[in-house]
Image 1 (cartoon, rainbow, N blue to C red):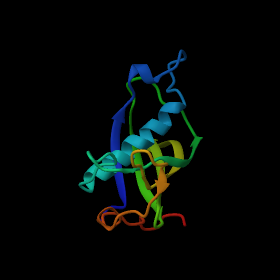
Image 2: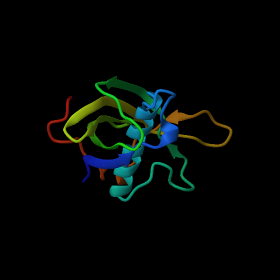
Image 3: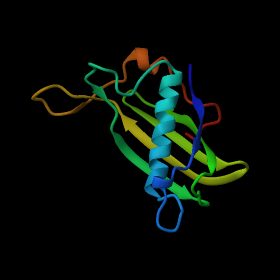
Length: 140
């Protein structure tokens, strides 16, 4: 079972603002990239072809502790901090070496979409829930 993942990344020029600092919106994208990498590591995809299951974000936050600049390498440590029947909450830490750059959380809900019907919350299928577990020492 999978509970955490370390995703390496390098800052691209288009991710920076006029001051050469990574724009704040990219931190959420970095966390989402790490989430998708965690799913791939577990042998899954958040966008399985032909599936009517989707994973919209229902909460997200980020605290900034430092800055990232073009060409800097960094890592996103993502861990599962909670799983319910219908949601998964992730906690992320972006680090450059020993320097903490940002911490964040985001929660995804399992929903089902069907033609001509409104989106509805759904129970996370056992074949997905069974691949993940809350990380040891995760915040409740």
